[in-house]
Each structure stands twice: as structure tokens, then as C-alpha cells.
Amino acid sequence: MRFASLLLALALATPAVAQQQTRIPDAALATAAQLREQALADDTGWKLIESLTTEVGPRLPGSEADARAVAWAKKKFAEFGFDRVWTEPVTFPTWQRRGEHAQVLGANAQPLLVTALGGSPGGEVEAEIVRFADFAALEAAPEDMLAGKIAFVDYRMARTRDGSGYGDAGPIRGRGPSVASTKGAIGYLMRSIGTSPHRVANTGMTRFAEGVEPIPAAALSLVDADQLGRLLERGPVRVRLALDCGWDGEYTSQNVIGEITGRESPEQVVAIGGHLDSWDLGTGAVDDASGIGITMAAARLIGQLPQKPRRSIRVIAFANEEQGLIGARQYAERHAGEVAEHVIAAESDFGAGRIYGFNTSAPDHARAATQQIAEALAPLGIEYMPGEGGPGPDFIPLSQAGGAWAWLAQDGTEYFDLHHNADDTLDKVDPEAVAQNVAAYAVFAYLAAEADGDFGSAAGASQMPE
Image 1 (cartoon, rainbow, N blue to C red):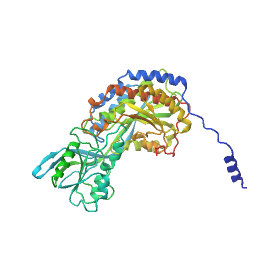
Image 2 (spheres, helix red, strand yellow; image 1 turned 180 degrees about the vertical axis):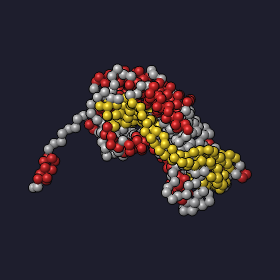
Image 3 (cartoon, rainbow, N blue to C red; image 1 turned 90 degrees about the vertical axis):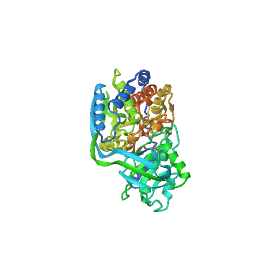
Image 4 (cartoon, rainbow, N blue to C red; image 1 turned 60 degrees about the horizontal axis):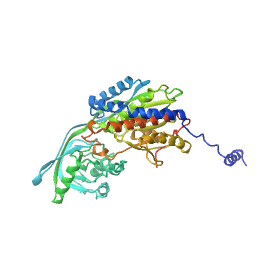
């Protein structure tokens, strides 16, 4: 037997040494309980949401408000006494909305409430519409079936607590206009991906495949989609769609980062955060000023403890999530050599509803620590849900690179009444629900930072759920 083969045989015959189990010290659990009660009585999270939405308002990536939002975040981190505050540049092409209009022509002439999809070109088209029940029907349409027509995809998104209905509807907005163009369409209309009973339309990004001719693309309010459906029952419908929007140069924004420096292992970080940008129709209160306010307030409370946490707490206000996780992708690229030092990460980017569930991607040796955190969260009405969840959007690139994630599941039953539309404003944010979120993030981040052992972060080992 060759020497190398002998070593392999011996290795296979020797019982593996059990990996050290990750645990959280009792003293940290006691501190977390106090932190939890303090957070429930603190209104800093809501005040931050109010400040960002009032003083800056909507924060379209690449706009003048984008720069003001960056300045706002830097100022708040400094005011709250974070030990380190810095920015990292994020460069991207800019898309602008200037105006949008649609109307039914002919005997039943009337206006339609629409909003341009992000990434749509400008232009005016006038044509008969062709209705499709869903994305699959559009994909299955014969080539050139839509030549000279406007495609209309009339899919109703389901209302769910976990937002799964959004994933089911996503291709209609993301890929629908591109597919319609390949079949000859000169314009694209879709029922908004949303659940609002109000006459508001939901925007969001679309992308055209390489070599596909971009066409004007817009979303209808649910009310107007219903109206269009009734008109189609009466016969052919001709529509004029006019959009003034499009790509306009390049812009450099910033990921804004604040950190509470750890007392023992400052190079290891527990990362939390949200995204600083928003769409331009409302003021971005639930998407995602809430996430910024919740995570910034949680870290502030941890920083005010008599003793700093063992590891660093890093709050990231990501740039340009809305146009494709651009700040998140550039953060993951910039910190590619530090994946293992990102002990675990969690993003608040699903509104401001109460958190009802918790889980992590932790491997077996860290499941006991996950359960300890879950027990500390239970008094907040949060259930331990093994096998569920995934990383928040802006931590997907880090998780794909091997970073561990935590899932603090917010109740999204009403989230899509507001998502990407004009109703996303401060009056929809419940201060008590925000306080519960702050308490949950403070408990999670503090206990993860105090844990003896790791949560499975390892460069190159994707942590994405199957």
C-alpha cells in the first residue's frame, strides 16, 4: 500500500473529532433579557424612520435625495456614538422617471392609472392590447403573435404572510417586457405586483435581455387592471401608453456603515442593516426606512451597554437595492476576503410588521446557539422555525460567498398594499411594531456577538437555502 493511501485509510478508520459546539454564556443571556425590555420602551427606531422619510423623503438611486440620504445616515451614526463610521462607493447607471400616462381610446375612452417600470425606456405607443393570464401564457405565445400590439399580463398576486406570492409573480415584471418584445410587442402593461385596494400602481425593476429591443413598460393599478379586463369582455381595446423616463448616465452613491467595535475580537462582525434607497412614488417608509431605523436603533442600544459586545456590531445602510442589490453586490466583492469574519448577518427589508419567526443557516454545531437566541426572542412572540427562511436581499451576495445568515420574519400580510407604490408613507408604520423589531434585532445581534464559537461562515461555502 502506498504511503498516501495508508494515511487515507487511517483517516477513514479514525473517528472524527466532534466540532466544538457554539454556545452563548448565561451572563450574555441575562444581559439580552434586559436589553429586550429596554428596547420595547425605546422609540428611537420610529424616530429614525420619521426623520429619514420627513427630512429626505423618497430616495431614488442616483437622485439628489440619494446624496442627502447618505449625509443623513453618516450624521445619525455619528450622533449615536458609533465607534467607526465610514462609506464605500457604489457606482451604477441611473434611471429617471419624469412622467407617465395611459388611456383607453375609442368609444370607451378613459384614463388609466399607470407607473413606469424601472428600467423601461421612454416613448409613446398606441395599439390594441392582448391579454395573458400569467407569465407562462406570455412565454407560450407564438412568435410574432404580438407584432404591433401591447401585451397585457393580468396575473393576480396572492396575499401571504411570508411574501411568497411576490416570488410567484416576480417574472411578470422582471422578464415580462423582454419576452413580450421578442414576440413583436411594441409596449407592455401588467397588473401591479401588489395587494392594495387603492388606486395606486406598483413600480419595480424590469430588465431586457441582451439583443432584445426595449419597449415602454408600465404597471396598472389593480383597479385599472380590473377595468381593462371588463372592457376586454366587451370587445377589442386600444390603448395609448406614453412614458417619459429612461437611463441617464452613471452615478456614484455610498454604502454607509456604522460599527460598534467589539471588546475582544473586533475583526469579527455581526452584520445587520437595511437599504437606504427607495422608489420615488411614496416616501419609502416601509421599504426600507423601517429597516434602517430598526437596525440602527438596535445597534445603538447595544453600544450603550456598560460593556461593549465581544465582537463588533456592524450596521450597513446599503445603496441601490431597488435596481438589483447593487450596493450589496459591491459590498460582497469589496469584502470577499473577509467572509469568515462576518460571523452572521440579518437584514430588515420586509416592512415594519411584527416579527413572528426566527431561524439561521447555522450548521449542526451551532444549532444549540440558534435555539438559545430563539428562546431569548420567544417573549416577543417570536417562534423558532427550523428549516425556514433565508437571507435578507442585501445579504444574498454575502451568503452566496459563504456567509451565515439569520432570518427574523416580519409579518408581510399587508406589506404589498404599500410596496413600491405611493401609499408607502410614514402613517402606515406602527411604533409598537417597530419597537418589537428593534428589541428582536438587539437581542439577536448582541447574543450572536457574545457567542462562544461560530455560526458556520466559511468562504466559498454557499449558505443559500435549497
